[in-house]
Amino acid sequence: MHSREIDGQTLTLVPSGWTYERTFVLYDKETGSLWYPYKNGLMAIQGKYFKRVLPEVSHEVTRWKKWIKKHPDSPHMEQALFLKGQAWFQRGRYYQAFLAYDELLNSYGAGKFFEPALEQEVEIARRFLAGKKRIIWGFIPASARAEAVEILDRVAEHWPGSELAATALMMQADYFHRSRRFIEAQQTYQVLCESYSQSPLYRDALLRNAEATHAQYRGPFYDATNLNNARFRYERFRLRFPDKARELGIEERLVRLTDQQAEKEFKIADYYRRTHRLSAARYYWTYIAQRWPRSDYADLAVTLLEQNPQEQ
Image (cartoon, rainbow, N blue to C red):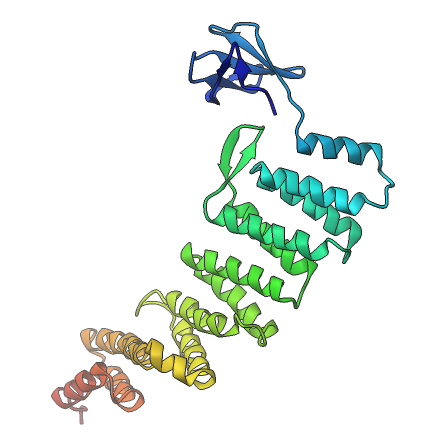
């Protein structure tokens, strides 16, 4: 961290978009001077403050770094690593905080700061998924959603079976779902359904598992496996949570699924009709009328059967 004070003025330092000797350069909005990392500070390499230096200043993170380096065998190392993470977190340097917490978790297992460190990692992932940036090279903001997914994976691995792990997996699955990454979403919801059936999150995971499965269906000219799987999962939700299913209109969703399944078979029948293979078309119309008798496509199928009698 560097001082931004010079000649009684506080500078606003931002990335310039340029590099000098393969290193990114900052500039200040007040004078347009360019600042380059140099020894223990930032040196102006162009502009009003040419060759002036903004010195590096000590902060809480620096103090904990020095303490940890000086006392590698201290019985208080676990606490020191946690406080180092907290110092980074308070500065908004969330990825550095995660690295400190994860070092603690890898080094000390289920110690005194195990659960607080995991809770902080979940909060860091939450902020990254909400749009907070990771700071690279000290000043360049970058999206950290991929890092958030990795962090949530690590949380679930550190404490499998816990409610915190269930929370991490739910956050991850919901992010995949919002991002229309339906296969990954469904797979993660499935893990929740299979391994966390006693969690308060189970009900939502069960529903969203069905929704993510249904969302993978691409239309009547594609495979219908996801429709069958979605029906099974909606039925499971309706059986397990009947009151909530009525509130959410699960029956209407099942009707929609029925129409989509019937539509797919109707498209096949129509192909055979257009290619003058009437016996095959009649087979599918009959199947639709018998399999989904309450669908709109069943009525169409019956009408077409009447209009296209079987050849003698």
